[in-house]
Each structure stands twice: as C-alpha cells, then as structure tokens.
Image (cartoon, rainbow, N blue to C red; front, side):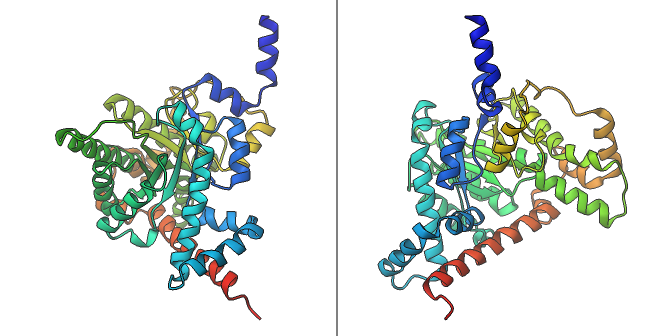
Length: 364
C-alpha cells in the first residue's frame, strides 16, 4: 500500500503534486478557455483576464470571436471600438469564471477567482476605478477585480473593498507597494465592520510582478553601467516576494501575496509551502511539468545572503523595491517598472481597439 502511494506521487505532475501537498495555490495567468481547462487539470484554482490576455485569446479563437464581435456591434450600434472590446473582455472573463465555480464553492470563496483588470486608461481617476470595479464585481460571484498599486489606485482599493469588491492588486513590484496595498484592503475591511456590513471571504490578493521587477533592475543596471553577476537579478523578484510574504504573515493581513509575471521557475518553486498564490502563464506551467521541477517547502528558505547583500549594495533600485518603506505612494507612480507596465497595458488597450476595428472594418 505504501509503495503504491509513493509510485503514484512520483508519477504525478509537479504542479498537481505541489497543489496537493502545500497551501500554496496555483492560478492560471490567462482566461483562454482551452489553457484554463488544462491548468485546472494541473490543480489551478484561479485565473486572470486583461486586455493583453483578451487580445491573445481572441486571436487564438477568431472563428468564435469574429461572429460574436459582429453580434455585439449589432446589439450596441452606438458603441465605440473600445466599448465593444471591453464587452469582449467581460464575456471572456465570465466564461472563465464559470470554469472556476467548483473551486470557488469548495474553498468558500477564498479561491476559484477570475481576476478582471480595470481599464488602465482610468488609472488617474480613483472614482472611475471604483465604479468600474463595482460593475465588474457584479458580473459573477467569483470575480476579483484588479486595481493598480499607484497613489490613486490605493485610494480606489480601499473604497472598492469597503463597497464589497474582492481585490487583486496589480501593477505592483515592490514590498512597499504590497504592504501599502495590504493596509488599504485592511482599512476597507475595518470600515465595513464599523458600519455593520456583512463579513465574508473576499479572497483578495496582492500581486508582486516579480519578473517585471527583474526586468526593470536589469535595464537600470545596464543604463547605469552597474556590473554584478547577471544571475543575481533572477533572484530579485523572489527576494521581494519572500519579504512581502513574511510581512503579511507577521501583520496578519487578510489578503494573500500573489506571484506573477514569470521569468524563471523560481518564482514558483521558491514560494512553495507558503499560504500564497502563484500565477504562471500556461506555458510556464507546461515547462515546469515537462522539466519535472520538484516542489519543496522553500518559502522560509532565505535568498543567499551574498546575492541579497550584493543587490542591496550595488543596485539602489532593488533597495527601494525590497525595503518596507523603500518608497512613498507618490513614488510608486514614477517607479520604472510601474511606468513601463502601465504603458504596456495602455498599448494593449489600443491593440484591442484595433482588433475590433479589423473585424468590423476589414481592409479591402
């Protein structure tokens, strides 16, 4: 009997094995229905959607979405290309949310969430972010809404939480952003309690886009002619995620840390064992399984002090990202990774507009 159990565990795919052993949960960084269905087989209990993901999903399934976009245009004859594009994002998200309903029910709302991102064009307007978040939250019980960890976004995060919206903090790369966002969620929850509003499981998460932090530090070092072992940069996002998890645990925040924007498998393997979320793109999940990357309890294993101390000493941008008080909320807005990511999300909005345009008005 024991040998049978061992053989079964050895034959199990690493992602599935990890999901069974640890409180660390897997989400899929895509709402593509085919990818999500496969990811659920790997043990995924969450997923995400945004304009970047929507463009990729629609292009991959144009046979389905081309006629649907025409139907939406007929149903909404005065809608702009942007409005039609966001209706597509909403439909794609609701479809994905249905696939996650069993996990949502089984976890009491802690998991089984579909993350739907607010329009990045609203990033300067807290009231508009809150209004859209409330609208998105009404699309399905298991929708969780993504709001950026900017100075304006923090205001929206607190208010949307107070109004009953489950939050996934996005455009977040640093420990300071994660802690500020965790505090904003706590303030919203306390306001609800003070006003006698119902308590429930929100399932809120605070993302650190570890790979995008790595990307920014590499580009900063290149521009500033700083030379260290290039492999050290691969650990920067991991170090920030481990530090944030430690702070969240110590302070008892009711939200969880989420690892996103993968650039290496350590952004999955180094976080196993913790009560947090890892959200790799589907291709990263496939590669982890194909390479049989084994999951061990490593959340409490610190990053090599030589790597950490070198980054802190030689890369000031890493120090800002790693320290709890490394930046003020106003500085979040101008942090290099924030600016680059917001611009990319805004460009994805434009691509979504263009995709709708090409469907409705194909070139002759």
